[in-house]
Length: 198
Length: 252
Image (cartoon, rainbow over all chains, first blue to last red; front, top):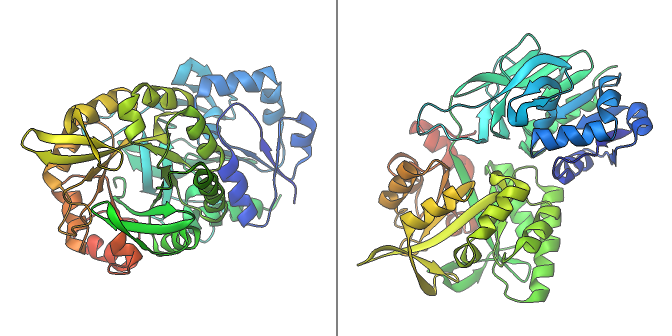
């Protein structure tokens, strides 16, 4: 299987590469539009800052390419946020796959620290991405911005408020958490993504 | 549901081997760092910390290669520390696959390093480790693995680090470390009250009650330990089940 990771200005992708290699897949990291379009699966990862990341995608013409992808696509963390309409981070317009905005966490109690960093649970999981998982399984998060619960939400997590831990619209899947850092549960989610029937 | 409290085994690495001291001296061998980390991950450790205690240039290269192996084989987050003096060290270790870096003496000598790491890589990668000891002048920070006292008070320095963008504080009480008589819960609780970032308790774990107390009395977000795990005095799966029964939110 040919898995492409979108190469752009959004941090380190080596943990995603390592996680795929543990599943027996050697991915290609590329910003070549044709190679992304032809891949069997596309992973759109990301750490870092939304504004810079989006500027790079536009500069390379990757925004239009990603919107037109027809194979299963998985956005991770900033990847999920950039698939939305707009982010409060840097007042950034996103790719608009998910018709919702990305907001900054506003903690009201001292113990609610931002970024939301560490292991938290998934609730209301649905769809093939979570095959074999249970409610309240733990996954690993690192983020300061969140996507509210929407019609596209396929898993929620409660931190300060319930938000979209994962979303799906057609062939576009996205997780706010890092499956590549979420132990055996994360490996199962990545395996499920690779196993999606097209 | 809130974030789970984290259990973090710490592996001190010298010449490619895990060691652990008592009160920072008397190093004892305790196994291969990658195999050990993998075993901890499978037992339910929430994160790992690898500290390079090798001083030499050659040792640094060995450590970087070990970081690459850890990143390739282990599917939970890990932090690396020891011998990080400048941005080039941070870049080298993050490129090797580490999720976070822990800086200690270098941050006290050059606090701007915290700002630089945060600006380039985000605050979530920047763990500021503090070794401190309670004296008649209060809690004082130490440099170089506890050998050199500084003018910094623990709480002032932790606040300064937080304001400069540190993502977490890893606080080791030098008086408690290796003594297995519990964490410095009073100081931990004060750090947690005064700061808006997660606090990792370090130094003093000897029995499971100590972990509970670090979370309940010390209000820590995570508890780090080494020898109790390395020498199998406490097993992580049993520890977590017990903590859960005690009402602590842990990842099972």
